[in-house]
Length: 98
Image (cartoon, rainbow, N blue to C red; front, side):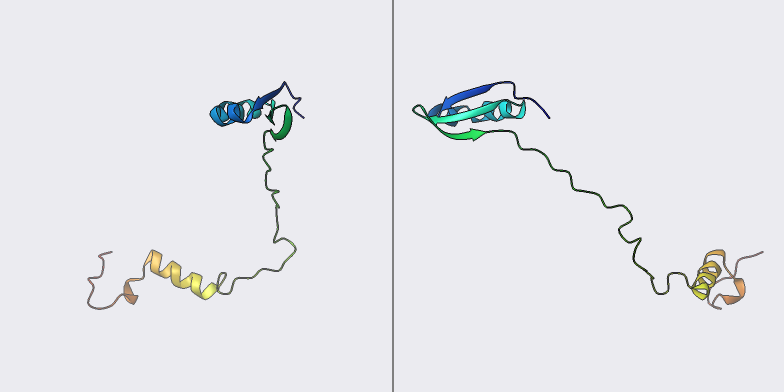
């Protein structure tokens, strides 16, 4: 945990005119108190960045099957289309010379 380096107190007017500097100070770990006259009314502190928790293998406990994804007949058709079968080509297309 990051220790607070400094606590600074500013008036509302100073906060309005130097907001960017005060936010930068808060990001460095400083605590900025905004006061109306001498009464503290607000505090600027750095927001802690929250990382989303990653769930690895979130589908491991479920039986997920994609229909047609592992279809041997479809695999054969894709292989035939990819590697080519000259006898399966339409007659209007010139057959490659082997």
